[in-house]
Length: 75
Ligand SMILES: [Zn+2]
Image (cartoon, rainbow, N blue to C red; front, side, top):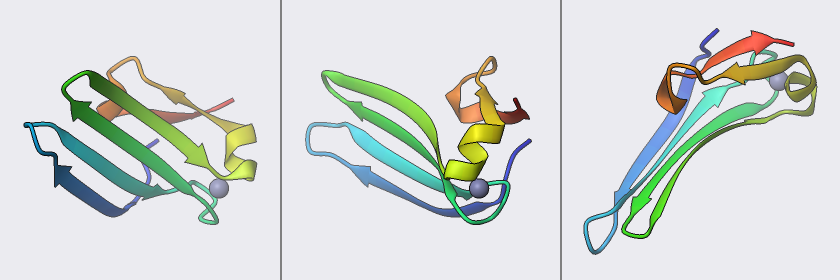
């Protein structure tokens, strides 16, 4: 399950890296899902997190197609 995108930001870093941040609604609508991509020389982090106590307990991510193609699945 994918949820509605609320916000995003992309900032280019000195030296050629970039930091990207995308915010989605969580399934119950009271929290958020934050997807972050950080590609700075020496730092390469990709992460997606549920920021909602309720949804954290009920959903997990299927990342088999990659972080950017995350799918929420019920636990
Ligand atoms: Zn929620």
